Length: 347
Image (cartoon, rainbow, N blue to C red; front, side, top):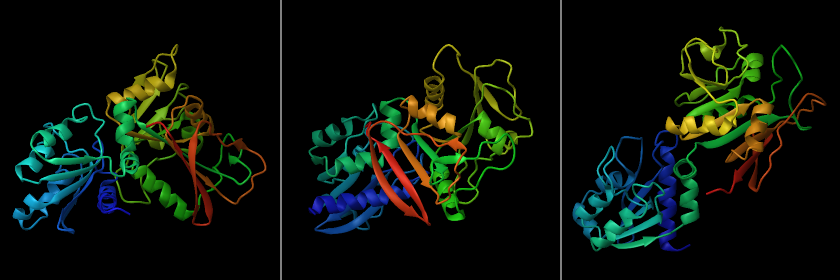
């Protein structure tokens, strides 16, 4: 492994500490190196707070060392005024002569301008170290800014013979996830800004869609409903967490919710995703049911999927969704169950 890659891997490790809190900003890590030693590290902790470069530079005790140092950063330093001043200007002002960057920022207000500003100021700039890995780190940010929609994660659990539940009109769903995998799912919920189910799942399962078994913020709850048949006592309408209802009917009115009416003559999912984009919802988790999940798959509107396979055999019931399209597959053993992790190549 080359030296520059070693320090860039450290930037990537640091950046992941911002998962669940940096959004809608990207996760970014930075390392300041002087004479082969790390003298400062930082990452973007939370949206609205200092960027990774600021934190890494602030961690350097002897600021005079900056004038003979290299700063490694997983993403191009910003060049515009947002909630914080431009990081490119800070690097220039502190006299850091060399900057090593993982990947260029896809955000239109940066998009190479930070790199150019550093070079115009006389800094040596190297770009593209572990570029694929750095882009993967910020895949949600890239998807949001290039495809103009949220990054979409699909999640479901199925039996070993390919069913997600018994066919039913009432009663409780079959439990396919064990307690530890339920914690893993709630961790995944905490890492998304919104979570979506269809009306049938809401009616049969009465889910709360909260983060109860992990630490983190509850996602915005989204209900896709064209029937208007849910009782007002549904947990989704308890008012404890913001809930957004998408429908094509004008007269649906549930308590403690905001309703957005979609055009019935047009495809619903692109409309829904455009509304979420306008609301700056960067990531969406779709939990079901099977028909809702399949509709996203058939429309090609998904980016990653987590499929938990329990050793249980149901022999009949509701068939699990079927994925299509070119994907990368990683298989994990998770607390006695198999978890298939799919990634689509879109960015």
